[in-house]
Image 1 (cartoon, chains in turn orange, yellow):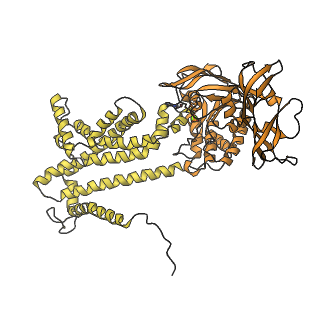
Image 2: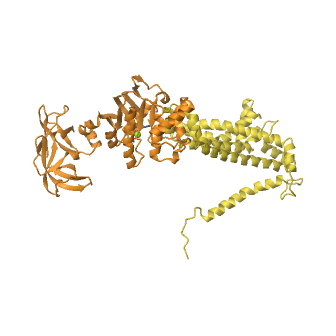
Image 3: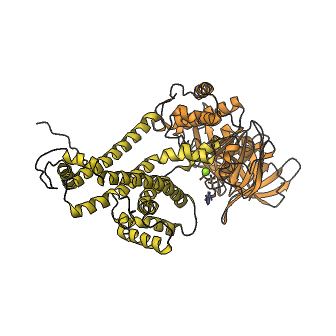
Length: 356
Length: 274
Ligand SMILES: Nc1ncnc2c1ncn2[C@@H]1O[C@H](COP(=O)(O)OP(=O)(O)OP(=O)(O)O)[C@@H](O)[C@H]1O
Ligand SMILES: [Mg+2]
């Protein structure tokens, strides 16, 4: 188990900068995700840590020691590929034994460890299978067993679930997270799926154009997005465009659609600045009642209602802007109709502003 | 009456006939050589006067055919090994590195299969004698000529395999602790081995049957089989030549069978673990 430091990491390909000044410290045993849209430099970052790509400038440290001069085989890093990269000319046993044989373990020992690793990933008895005789999920487990058996210092995973179907993806998500926390191995996980990143990670770095747009816990990132990009990339949100009209120590007043709301202030905003209020659909309530203390209320009109199974989703017009609300269907869920005027409410703690 | 369910023919009937005819035309000469070599008469005739092993025996006792056969075998094996090594290295260079002039290099190394062999033989011979580098009419000089024409087959096969090669397999091996060389040996080579085997067999067969390139390059004391056949048939019309032909065909068949066996064996051993 090790900690990892990326120091001003840069990777350029000719005139394109794939990774642009990325610095982050990842703690021992942490589950860290790199999250971002396609082409933002996630894989390149991971591949530089593994040693598959050279770095253009900066440094990568494992346990405080620079590793950028070391070839991949000297870094002691486990890498799981998007396509699993199971050696097709070897069966499961030989795939998993590969790293141990290179380390000249005695045959007896290898057998014991491979058997244990297979058990750990729930693949006992499939030693003789070849790559083309396994499902994606099984290959995934073999790929994990193959790196874990060598007891790497850190585990790197590049979109390991993206090739699986939805149900299996859900299952593997929790399975990988469990395995990781049981082993306590420092893990860097690359994904473009915000759901995966939110459920699995201790911390997330949201990347955009080779840079880290925001670094924080899943809660931070979801509830306190730094900018519009992060807010839109993580989860669904409505943005209410307006202006900061007054500020105090405890908060500020935000005016939008001709109405005033209480919101949390952030240091990078001042009175008079244009801003956007991020509202997550599940944090917006729709009701006939007046809002309570610490609640904001806006008067809106229901423009569309859709039934989602577990939830009801309303589109609400507030002035000339739209707010989405989604609430669980319970016994006292009010029946609203299109065109009805309602109170649209959200708690002050959920009134997070973004600079625009 | 029950209708037969409609089934699309996998191969249209006309194709089957054309393929059958082509196969027949290709196999007839082989059949002719075979029977001519087993002729009991004194001359190379077809149909044979009777069947006997006398010319097979003559082949083994001959002081020109058997040595020529063995010499061709040695040259072909040498050319094959050199082509495999050189061809693999050149393929790696062509497929895995980006440099200006890569397309040109590719065209140059592949050109010997497009040029007439006689031209290659003649140019090499002129080159050897005009620079007086001691290769004219030597075994080394002959092997160089053969490698020129056999190497492109290996390059063709191996580069095709490398183009479709999933590099993440090599990266996986590296991060599991394998050095570059170990990765090449344990991952790259086994995975491109079908291409290596096919390229090697091609190289062997092309070299073994090589006449054009050999014509000007053959050393005075040793003659490869195709040249020996040609020279002796100019003076005598003996069935020993056909008998030698039988052994040449035999060699090709054996190399094909070995190839098939090796590829099968690989499949079996992959499914075995300890
Ligand atoms: N070998 C290369 N040569 C040139 N440009 C490259 C190379 N590899 C990556 N890039 C560029 O670097 C940028 C980042 O690529 P990277 O693969 O890291 O993205 P990513 O975040 O992993 O995206 P994805 O989610 O699609 O995998 C992209 O713009 C890509 O085009
Ligand atoms: Mg990627």
